[in-house]
Image (cartoon, rainbow, N blue to C red; front, side, top):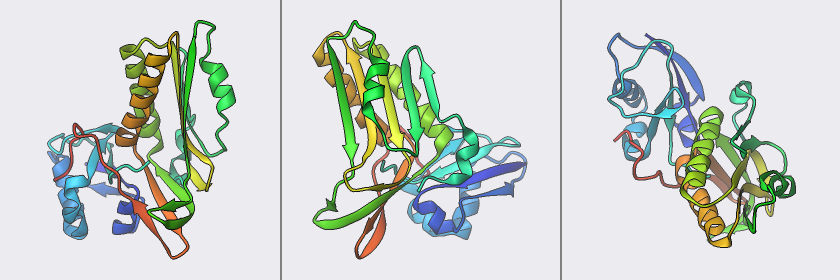
Length: 243
């Protein structure tokens, strides 16, 4: 069986590539795929407890059977330039029942996003903007680069947003994440929630950014004056890991 295997964030540096096509024996599962690469790159075994595997852009357990033509992705802990290999997955936006989700390489302007979620029935619009800090624990930051599994990230953002809208008394939700290089002070992510009343708007916006940070496959590399590092975040506890 032939599969397309993808690597993101720090894992690209571990294996020395972003993607490759590989052959696997009939009856192989995702564990066999992982073990194949871990045998070649032992550091993957050391990181197994924090690596998540996706099959065809959905989280999957290692026991999941592989089929011919599958796309398998190895994902390090989320921390969210963009990988240009995935620009072919356009469009980078989804609109569903009035909710809006997008990935962009341009500066985020929240004004049209606020206008997009307003219907006239709102008494509150809550906007969260995540911005690039000028330091991490006192270490001066020059810029950030974001790597992203674009099709899965967009699909996951839409799922989170629609679930939040169904769980809270809100009218519309919008989520936009920027990709590529960002400088200090620039907006990396925006979550906007419109609702008749302020409490559900605040609650939904907070839940939205918290879930986005733990579920959406976006990774951040921070550049300092004296070096650079991939920022390790933490997967949601319900996401299956490789180890």
